[in-house]
Image (cartoon, rainbow, N blue to C red; front, top):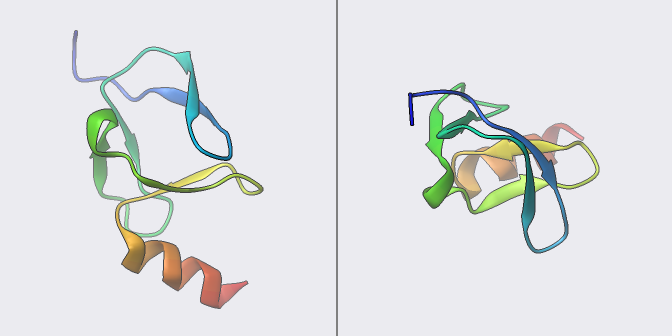
Length: 62
């Protein structure tokens, strides 16, 4: 598969692939996140985060 951004629907404990791809982009840092390493996201905002650090920064902003 080519290096392509995936489109996902973020659920409470998983995500659903809407459009196939290899990665997503962190909503805070802009870092590339391989789908196999995606562990942090916000269901309400439908945003992925590279790590708990980015997720915490976003939480603090809200």
